[in-house]
Length: 359
Ligand SMILES: [Mn+2]
Image (tube, rainbow, N blue to C red; front, side):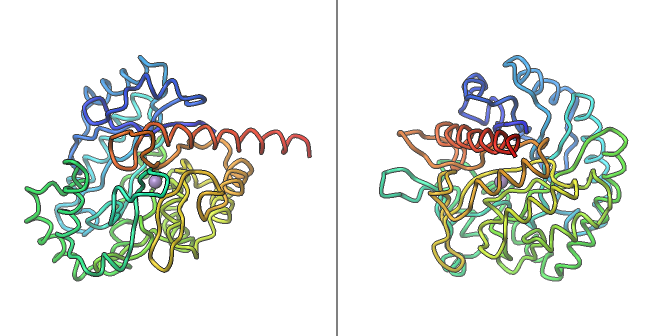
């Protein structure tokens, strides 16, 4: 297991790399070029600069998230081939600088969504919160605007206010895209990208949809064990793998996370994991919790044990955290609470590791 930490880059992340280096046990980051629009080619110069900064702080940069998939690829439009060519070339460039895993997602239109970015807890901390009943009352445009208002200028990825016209257009284009169509478009993408990954030694790792159900009538096809099974079979190669985020899949209480880590770990298809907890509050309603099993609805011990047993060499990172101790920053990506999560997860790992040697 390699314990990593998400970092958005010098201009986009308020947390300096030096602070990340000071968190016990962190050996690397999951990095990104936050400024890069979906579909663009990542230049060698930009990648070199990122990797160089990370190395200068004695950290590794072997995982990149997210190389975003252009909407035309998900929609299966004629224009997709140019964007897929850029994606393949980006993978070649990343491989040149030592990147081993690329985390991506295949969610239509929106990345992860929450109805509240700073839901207040009784102890004065704040967390991300989701209530499907609220979403039912909103339009896609409402949620984009609300997120921008609630986050001090941080916009939903790809949906800066000046691009809202495009949002309506894209929503219309999806009106005729079924779940099967979306999966077919995904296959088309993977059939072109995976051979390049195999050639240069990079593994793709898809992040599940969050929350793990359809939104605004848009199809979502990475929400359950059965979905993951269909995805890894779209192209049967170890390079076509998963970044299992237990908080995302865990939004749906029907998903048995320890069993999912066990099955796909055993099948060699998990290359990265986001570990965090979520507390179910009712149908379609949840809040993000501290990483501890006792704070949420997921059994983090069983999850860590499944990873240790079935895919011990993967990259792991603590996922979203709460805002505590007066910290201000990017919603979901604070320093303090994620650092606590990283240390807790390593405590579980040490326990599982030593117990496994005794038996
Ligand atoms: Mn995640």
